[in-house]
Image 1 (cartoon, helix red, strand yellow):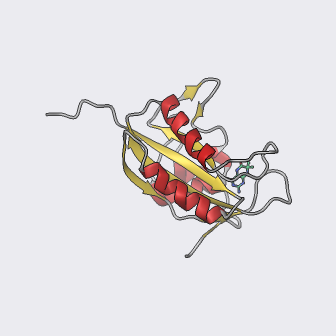
Image 2: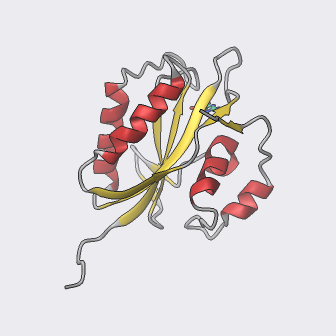
Length: 166
Ligand code: ROI
């Protein structure tokens, strides 16, 4: 019988620059695979990136994960925030350092705008630490507005962003 359930392909950006960021991101990737109603997980390489935002904060580790889910966007957001909380996310300053950030970047081909959630993620088009990891996973990605990832990459130099070899 045909699979009647509506699986949506979603992409999650991960970032950390406190409390052993490599370990924070690695364990969060594992925790994403344990979410209910999600399947077919994959993730990019892990990258070291210079902080965007206030200077003087530590370097970040960033990655992008993708999986299919039947969770509705806000239920998925709740699940992501529960993982952030479990990592004892501290966020003292706007755009300041954090133990773990999980951003819902893309949810199928949907555009979502409500008080809790903006998808595609508001800044993803201009952030190398999102676009290059995404290209590891899905170089042919298109945003709901039709913009191709290749075009975004062409306008966003990789700079000092570098894959971590461990
Ligand atoms: N800078 C980098 N390099 N990586 C991030 O994940 C990140 N996240 C943020 C701000 C503070 C904007 N800067 C970042 O939220």
